Image 1: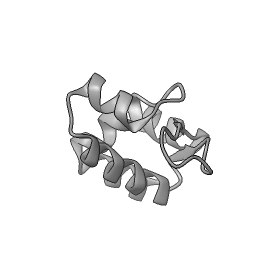
Image 2 (image 1 turned 45 degrees about the vertical axis):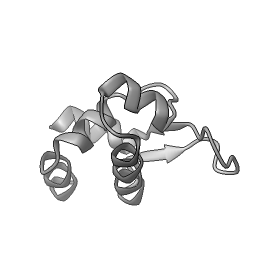
Image 3 (image 1 turned 180 degrees about the vertical axis):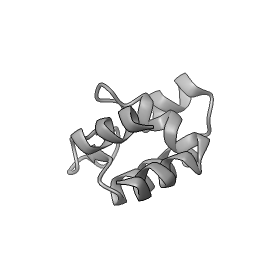
Amino acid sequence: MYDLISFLSRSKNRKTVLENLEKPTTPTELASKLKIQRSTISRTILELMDKKLVKCLTPKEKMGRLYQITDLGQKILKEK
């Protein structure tokens, strides 16, 4: 678990994105809200998905995919 806490703490964007995925959100909505480029948001979401901290709720969609924090992601945020 501490390896995930370390992974999260090494990037301000990872922590910020994870904190803002409490409800289903698209990368475009996050980029607008956080004032971060959409490509950076998308790359960060992929990193978080790889660690099972975020899940895609609409994987069959080509555009406008919705993402949300997982139970593991919530647990890691609380430990942080």
